[in-house]
Amino acid sequence: MNDDLYMSQMKPNEIWIGNTKTSNGLGWRSEIKSARLGEQAFCIDRKKLSTDYVLPIFINKSDQPKHDSMYAERMNAKKE
Image (tube, rainbow, N blue to C red; front, side):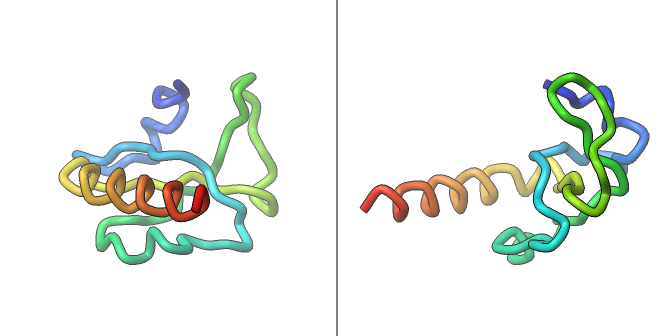
């Protein structure tokens, strides 16, 4: 996991939940009040990714159960 790369962008009590295409914005995660985009995303090799391509998404730790439930719901809908 690349959490350490994102620490400088996190606010207190936030977690990094992944990256999203810049053109998508927050997408469905906009339903989570604490969701916000960061400034710089990184690839699995710990290299900076173009901000024109992707940005990181952060949420408050207290919203993680809601996020995980919403994510599971979306993945299950895709299987149907």
